[in-house]
Image 1 (cartoon, rainbow, N blue to C red):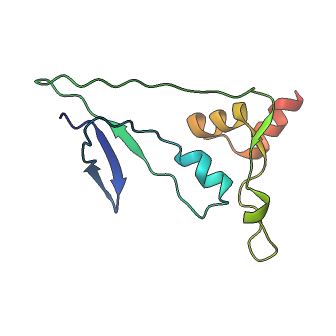
Image 2 (tube, helix red, strand yellow):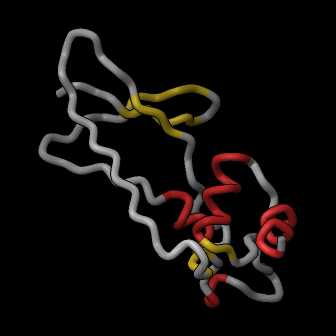
Length: 112
């Protein structure tokens, strides 16, 4: 087994344990939004190894770009725990995640 996934945990990079015949799926951003922040996404990275071969296969499944798909589930929002994430389309989420755009910028760009 060739390790290749690291997670940023408690201020340092930690190498994830390899599990034979397994698949790793990162759904952290989606779970963080759906849970209204109860579950946190984690910063991660892939490593390369000069001596051993490891196969990584990144697959991105994208819903329709203009449909609201990411917002906290109704059961996770209350008066005591208001929504921490505004409803956003997948396109808005990518703009926020990759380019750090805030919700106000995303909404104004859509109107233009």
